[in-house]
Image (cartoon, one colour):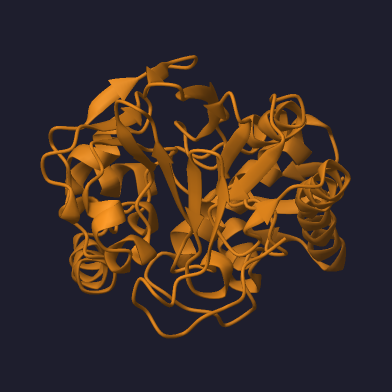
Length: 310
C-alpha cells in the first residue's frame, strides 16, 4: 500500500495512515528521494519521531511538538527536520553518531575527501535539506529501547546501507520502520565509506525475522501491511545485488578493465550520470563487488590494477 502522491505541501495536503499510536506522514510520491516518510508515535508519556525527512517541515504542530527523535541512520535526507526540534533529544546508533554530530563526521562517513566537493555538498544540503548537525546527538546500541508510555521503540541493528543503519520497531503494534532498506527498484545502496556489501546481505536475510505486522520504508514504497507482498519485494530488492555482480562480470568478460574504467561504465547509475558523490559511491560499490569476486576466484587482478574475469 502506498499513499497517493501530492505536490502541494501543507498539513491539509499530506497523506497519512494510522496504526494505533503510530502515524505515517507520506512525503511526495510516497517519500521518493529527496523526500521521505515521517513516522510519529504518540506515547502516553512521550511524543516521538523516527528520522526527520523533508516532509516533516510541513506537518506543523503535530511534528513540532515531538519530544524525542530516534534516528534509524544518518544521511542528509533523514536530518531535514532536526532544525525544527532544537530541544528534543536525538538518539543515533553508535556507529553513525559522529556523522550526525558534525559536518566533518558526515563527510568521513560518506567518504568525501576532496575539500572542494565538500564545500559544494554542504551548500547543497543546507539549501535543499535544511541541513544542520546535532553535536548533542546521543549514541545507542543494538537492542536499545525507549519507553514512551503504552508504546515502546526497539532497535534492531541492520548495517550495510550505513554502519549504523537500524530497523526501529514500535511495540506492541508491530510497526517496523525499515528505513533505507526501502525495497525500491534502484536496489540496495552501499556506496558510503562506512557501507558494507557483506553486512547488507546479512541484514536482508535478517529482516524477514523481525517481529512486525506493518513495514514502513523511508522512500517510495511507503507502507506494507501484507507480509507476502513485503517478502516478495524484499526478495526482488536483494536480487539487485546479484544483478550488479553479473553486470560487473559481463564487463570484465568484454575486456580487462581498471577500477577507474569500471567506474566510468557505472554500476549504480546510468552511464554519464554526474553528481558530486557519484564517483566516490561507484568506486566504493564496485570495489566491494570486486573484493568478493577475487575472494571467490571468479576474477583476478594483475600488478597494474587491471581486473579480468578468471
